[in-house]
Amino acid sequence: MTVPPLRERGPDLRLLVERFLEDANARHLAPTPAVYRALQGYGWPGNVRELRAVVVRWSVFCERAVDVADLSPEILGARAATPSVERAPAAPATTLAEAVSAAERAAIAEHAGNKSATARALGIDRNTLKRKLARYGLDPGERR
Image (tube, rainbow, N blue to C red; front, side, top):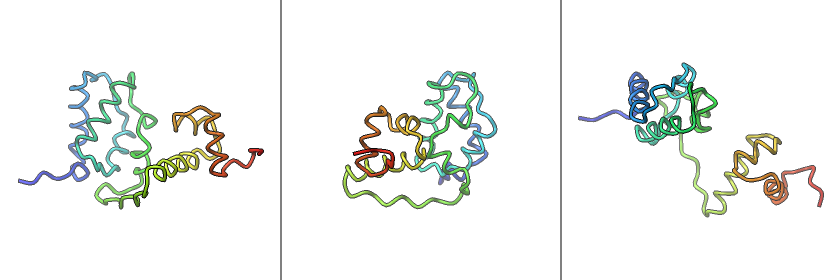
């Protein structure tokens, strides 16, 4: 017997979320319909374990309703994707420094000049962000 991957079990997603909320003693959390739509559109490379981790995160950080703003960027980025289509993995960086640099550049690009939002996304303070922007040559207002 073969169990299909989570991305192919759309109707089971709501039942699994409800079960994981119960397991996390967070039945009071109510995901919005938009959350379920976003979850349906995600490919779930980590399968059911990844979904469980997402729900446990909600139980820690959410108080009542789970809204789209509570979803990770990975899940939100997949909203337009078809659930049954697998996305190609990104090309791996050759070194850890290159991977960190790529992640930092992606966060900087995603927040389009909003230094406060970029610093929060990277988990650093604004002064550290300013140094990174200068190092990458991405801050046109930076004076040297």
